[in-house]
Length: 88
View 1 (tube, rainbow, N blue to C red):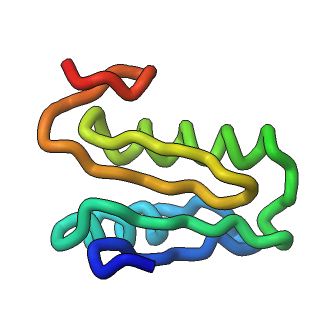
View 2 (cartoon, one colour):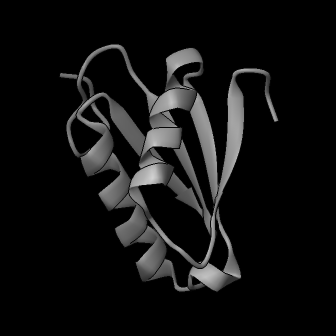
View 3 (cartoon, rainbow, N blue to C red):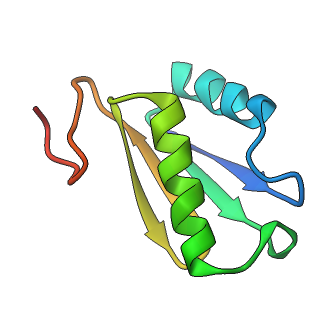
């Protein structure tokens, strides 16, 4: 893991307001956050994609997500980006 990246796990409670708050706090000092989806949260690719979309919608327009397996890589940009990850 690189020095500018932290790691968070999503467990059986799924996406909670506390998790979103934790993500926002991590993005105060970091640009990248790695979110691992555990088996107890549901190991279904469609469910991971829905979680990713929900996280991005709650964080705001300056964030993008990339899904690799059951891991979501979140990145914070300086300027807003569109749904395809292109800067506006």
